[in-house]
Amino acid sequence: MNLTSETTPTVLIVDDNPANLGVLSDALDQSGLEVWVAKSGTVALERVKYALPDLILLDVMMPEMDGFETCEQLKLNPATQNIPIIFMTALSDTDNKVRGFQVGAVDYITKPFQQEEVLSRIKLHLKMNDLATQLEQKNVLLEQKFAEVSQAYADLQQMQIKLIQSEKMSSLGQMIAGIAHEINNPVNFIYGNLVHAHEYAQEVLNLVHLYQEEYPEPTERIQAALVASDIEFIEDDLLKLLSSMNIGAKRISEIVKSTRIFSRVDEANMKEVDIHDGIDSTLTILNYRLKAKPEHPEIEVVKDYSELPLVECYASQLNQVFMNILANAIDALDEYNQQRTFEEIKQHPSQIKISTNMINDEWVAIHISNNGPAIEEKVQTKLFDPFFTTKPVGKGTGLGLSISYQIIVERHGGCLYCKSIPGQETVFVIEIPLRQQISKVA
Ligand SMILES: Nc1ncnc2c1ncn2[C@@H]1O[C@H](COP(=O)(O)OP(=O)(O)OP(=O)(O)O)[C@@H](O)[C@H]1O
Ligand SMILES: [Mg+2]
Image (cartoon, rainbow, N blue to C red; front, side):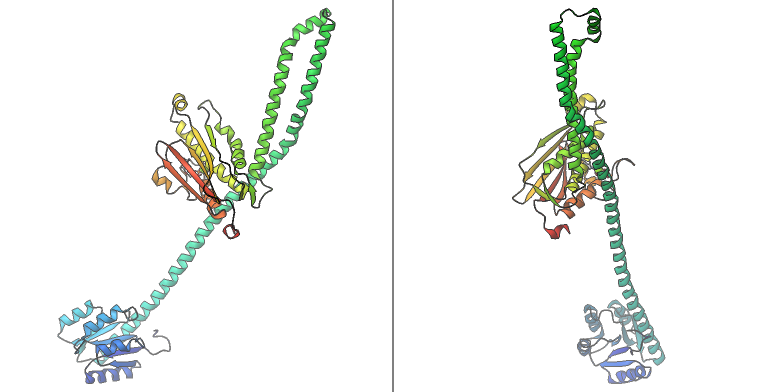
């Protein structure tokens, strides 16, 4: 109902007294309102089932059902509960006026009627009701808008996180892959030539031996040179040196290979991969953080891999998850070790355990645990929230786990959760299906 619009407001008068009805309906009719009448509460309740008036004038004293009961019934019905009701009562009837307000009336008018007063009150309440309705509609609209804005804000935040992380990872991945590529050639060059270097060194030494056999009494100059150069030591050390160079070069090639497996920049699409390769390459990259340092002994890594089939996934993203979870485990152990002495750490060494297994024919699980301090419950509830971190400014961005969650849950339709048992271990569990349904990774 809108008083300013073309539609005429309707008023339902409920009164058992035909004289009252006549007077009132004439007055209202003349002032441009549409009038409906009902001779009893029961009739009124029937009437509103077919069409709703904008206001109801309700007599208190009626046989069968009085005004109060009629009013209560109207207030119980969601369709009619907001229609303003004005009671009609005798001038002296204070109790009835009070009770009328208690059952939900907005006003009362007294008999005998003062026409002008009745009209003013009716118009006032029609106007107020109209404003209330408009306000309610505006409120609904506002709530809708608020929900839309909140959603847009949440979407924007998610988008920003994804952007930051993908930017960080893609530039990092490209840099790692670039460096790996650049190192690959020279290292192969060294590694490949070491075999020949070993061979040639051996031949030169053989030749020296031959000379020594054929000329057991060399000239004084040669004898002096032999003593000065300590040829026996050189002979012994040269071969050891070459074989340790060989081990070193081999190690560099393994790191290069791991970085390539880890970054997999050339493999943006879903592929079937060996999950263990991904974990191992991540461990190789993190090796510098696991090794013994002056301030703490090495962090032991215990692997318990089951035989797993290849898993269909976005390999580089999954490796990112391993990286985030392993780096967090190392951070937690490092922090813990700062409060322990070297001896204490030696007695209860820091340990990271990685185990894999099939949950059933279609799902694999990866458990990554560490024996650092447990995560408090209030922290546990926020672990996967974007930007949640307990690390000092500049050390943690609080994005590692939220990104990991997105990768596992949203990209791979899997589960990622944490169990932390005080005095025992903190474990992060990744569960993913062996095969991806296209719909899940859209
Ligand atoms: N293994 C763990 N043991 C104890 N606390 C952990 C462990 N893993 C995560 N946490 C807690 O969860 C928080 C959030 O981890 P998350 O990886 O999301 O962010 P971050 O490590 O603080 O920063 P970054 O963005 O650099 O990863 C950490 O700050 C830490 O408090
Ligand atoms: Mg982290």
